[in-house]
Length: 494
Image 1 (cartoon, helix red, strand yellow):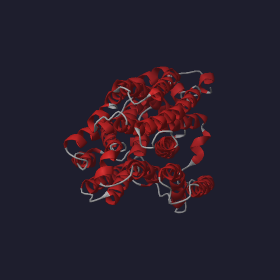
Image 2 (tube, helix red, strand yellow):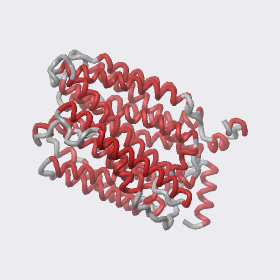
Image 3 (cartoon, rainbow, N blue to C red):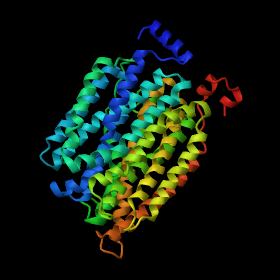
C-alpha cells in the first residue's frame, strides 16, 4: 500500500467516507462469510436422519457440529498471523477454496467418517473468513460508522446459524441429507469466483514468522477441554473410551503452556495469538459477554431441535421453522442496532438485549411433552432479538478499544473464543441433558426423561443469562469513538 493511498484512506476515515472498492470488498466478504457460517448449524436437524441412514448414535452424530466448531477454534488463532502475512485477496481465495472443497466432499461422502472429514475441511475455510471480515472492517471503517457495519456482521454470526436448521429441514424433507451440501456448493463456488474478481488487498503484509510450538499447544488445549465435556455425556450414556479426567488434564495443561508461550512471544511481536489485547478492560468485558451469549445460542440451537423431534414429534421441516422467525428478526434488527450504537452507545442496547436473552431461555425451562410449537417459536424470537441487540455493541466496543496494530489478533481472539464457547456450550448442554435423562425415574430415552434433561439444560442456561446481564452492565463505548464525536476528555477516559 503506497503512502498516498494511506493518506487518502486516512482523509476518508476522517470524513466518515468509504471508497467504492472498499465497500465492494466488505460486501463480498459479508456474503461469503454468511454462506460459510450457515454450515455451523445445518447438521443439527440432520443428526436424527443420519443416525438412521449412517447408523450412528446421537453422541457420535453431534460431532458433525462440535468438530466443525472445534476445528474453527483451533484454526482461528492462526488467522492473526495469516492476515499479517498473506494479502487479503489471496487469503480469501484460500478460505473459499477450502470451504468449497469440503462442501463437495460432503456431498459425495460414502459414510460418516468421510462426512466428518469433509466438515473439518469446511471448517478450515470458515475459520479464516470471520476474522478476515472483522479485521477488514476495523481497518477500513472509521469509528463513527463501525456500529452500523458491525450490525451487518451480527447478521452473519447470528442469523446464519439461526437459519441453518430451517434450510436443512426443508432440504431433508424434499431432497435428502446430501443436498444440504449439494445446494451450498454452487453458491460457494460463485462466491469464490466473484470474490476473485472484486476482493483487493486492504492492509500491509509483513514477514512475521510462525511459532510452530504454539500450534500443537492450541490444538491440545482447546480440543482437550471440549472433548472432555463431550466425554462426560458419553460416559453417562454408553461408557467413554477414555477416562473423563484425561482430556481435561491434557487440555488444561496444554492451555497453560499455550498462554505462557504467547505471553513470552508477544514481547518480540511473534505471538501466534497476541494476548496484549486483554490489556484493554473493555475488550476483556466484551469477550466474556460474547462467550456467554455464544455458548447459550449454540447450545440452544442444538437442544431445541432435538427436543422438538424427539418429544413433540415434529418433522424436519417443522423443526427448522422454529428458528426461522427469530433468524429473520435478527436480520432486520442488525443494521438498526448498529445505527443505534453509533448514536447512543452500547448500554442502551446490551442491557435490554441480555434481558431478552434471559427471558427466552427461562421460557424454555417450562417445556413438557405437550409444549406447543408456538411456545418454542416465541422463546426463540426473544432469544434471537436479544442476541441481535447484544452481539453488535459487544463486538464494536471490544475491537474498537484495542490499538489498530492489534486488530488482526483481536479479531482472532474474538473468533477463537466464540467458537470455543459455541463448541463448549453445545457439549455442555448435550452433557447435562444426557446425564439428567439417564438418571431420570423414567426410561432414559423416553420423552419424559428427555424433558427432564432439557429443563435442566435451560435452568443452567438461565443462570448463565443472569451472568450475561451483569457483565453487560460494564460495557462502554471505546475512547476513540467518543473522541471522534467530540466528547470531553473526562468522558473519553471513563
